[in-house]
Length: 125
Image (cartoon, helix red, strand yellow):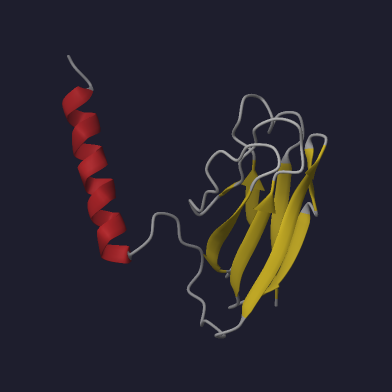
């Protein structure tokens, strides 16, 4: 028996839920404050600096990701926000969204996450 049809159906169901809820991964419902927290994240070896970002609950988080390392890196967040691959010396802005709960971020290149390239967004209440 092929698993293709059940997987296609599950994908269609997930896509429908995303369309209905407006997001792929949502935390608890939170009232937006209308404020924005802007943070610059750089690379030092196989670490993000800073590796903890504190954001008041309800604030939108905007991260400027500067790849100050010597190899390709990216920055992905648990809610689906993603920098894409960033070459050394380049930067990009990632609009993470309104923060309602703690969230992880990581580098998905190679084994970088396993080598410690992680950060945490802390929702400050």
